[in-house]
View 1: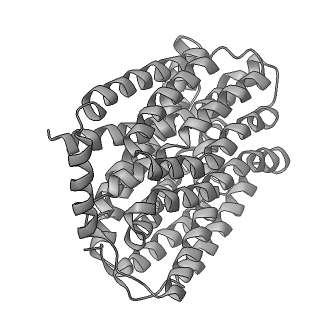
View 2: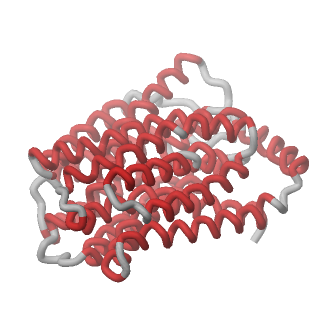
Length: 401
């Protein structure tokens, strides 16, 4: 395995851990902490909000520091910082204390997307498949959060669900420093990166086209962030309520969530291939349309039907993830790409932070049927915005190069 391949593997592991850490509390809150602390689901989950706010707000400084300093150094800070924060969260004895731990997890989790994704696409002419592979790892982290947390709750306790991945992340961070950072010849790496970047720099586009493109990216990112966060955060509780005959324990709920998330994650590979070979506008429109249809179908379903349709709508939700990242990679230059990604993700994660209290409010007042109505309408607005994408341009037709 070459050093570039090894580094790509570390970046993929980082994406996996990033999403796993952000959803451990979602499963723990739904399945055990409500009973241990005598609170309802709607009362407890707002304590996750500080973590999601930090996840959003800290992406801007993380992207700026990475562009000005070094991206690999920021990745080392990510691995070690998020691991220590997670382990410390296990010491919480009250909702307020766990909110503090989740805040620091969010601070370090914010590093990954602006920094890691910039490293994934750097020097590549075709960005769809690498971003899709990386995205699959991120979504496997989403899937594993429910499975691992549910298993550890049943066998050891909720604290272990924070400690075990925390220790693992610190170990990965130390390995990254030893195998990647300490082995780099900084001058040679910089020169090679510059040559690769020159080959893959995007063409110059008219100002009006860029404004239109980035407006659509920001809008679809915002609404897509609401849909992604709502579905991934709430799915364990949705299954706990709607799969009563199929899931009778935390581990079983975790297994069903893992099944849905894992199958859906591989939608990104198909989408990554398609956007490297076909019109992004067409692919994006189909994905948004499928989200609208399947989220709408989920409104009143229970049992096996709910499980099957959950797979379908998560395929569409996860399939959207690499599309905006591909558009940004094709339209931005390498030297400020981390900052552009940080803007995209501060929008996505700001909306994600607001999704948690929104879920609590809607679930407390009307249940999950109302939530799926809201999400289906959101998917319809994404479809409308995508149809306004330009029909021409290399960032729409194919990869940069």
